Length: 119
Image 1 (tube, rainbow, N blue to C red):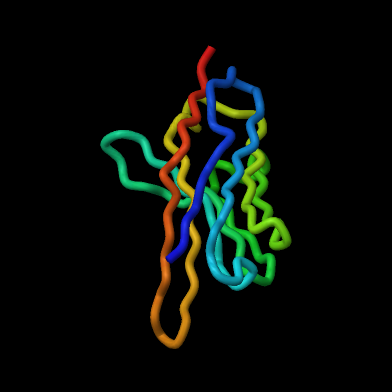
Image 2 (cartoon, one colour):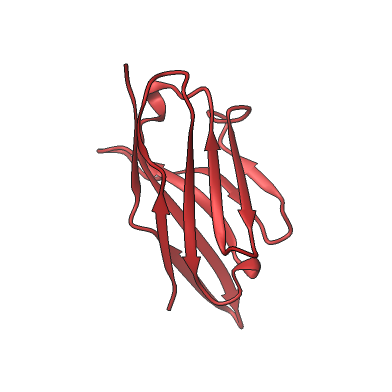
């Protein structure tokens, strides 16, 4: 079993910054593909950014150039640096970790952290 715990959400003004953290309790964190998703009421959860074990990153078009995903495998922690925040970035942000072991997919989700961008 694994566990992901997000932190760092909150209220910020437009143009401001936040850094989200996700502490992972999984076996061999470095072998997991990890990412950040977000969801607003009435809409599907969407990918914000992801990073593979090898360090390859993917970003949603809406956050490219503003958000940066990173991981610290020594600390079993995933980060999302969010700059130039916009009201449309308001959502619950979830941490995700996935790994396939012998054809079995293991997927873990955090409980979510609220990010509100408002003046």
